[in-house]
Amino acid sequence: MPDGIVVETSGIEMMPDGKLAVCGRRGNVYVLSDPFGPPDKIQWTLYAGGLHEPLNLAFTDGWLYCTQRGELTRMRDINDDKRADVFETVNDGLGDHRRLPRVRLRHPARPER
Image 1 (cartoon, rainbow, N blue to C red):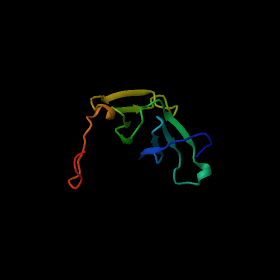
Image 2 (tube, one colour):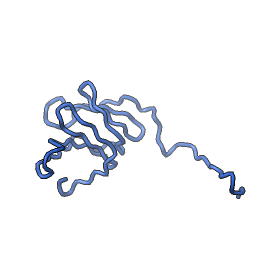
Image 3 (tube, rainbow, N blue to C red):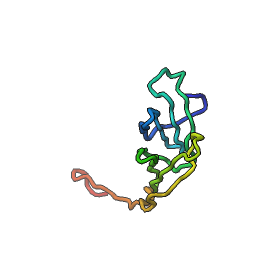
């Protein structure tokens, strides 16, 4: 991994061309060339940035799909510069995990407080 890149990996996806897409909590998606080759030969390319805590990736029909907090997004590179140019919201009705109702669980062996 190049100096200065911190990923905190949350999702990976093998691409049809043998490259590996990696996303992380900090909002970036990288594409790694020859991910099984010698570590010093792997090239890290920033494919997309500014996402909201990407959670996982999936590639299908020419699109890289990314689940992020509250949204499912698909992206693709249309001008062959190795960066996503088109971003489309597939579903933004997932809600925000911070808005879930609080549930208080009680253990049967512990008395009420």
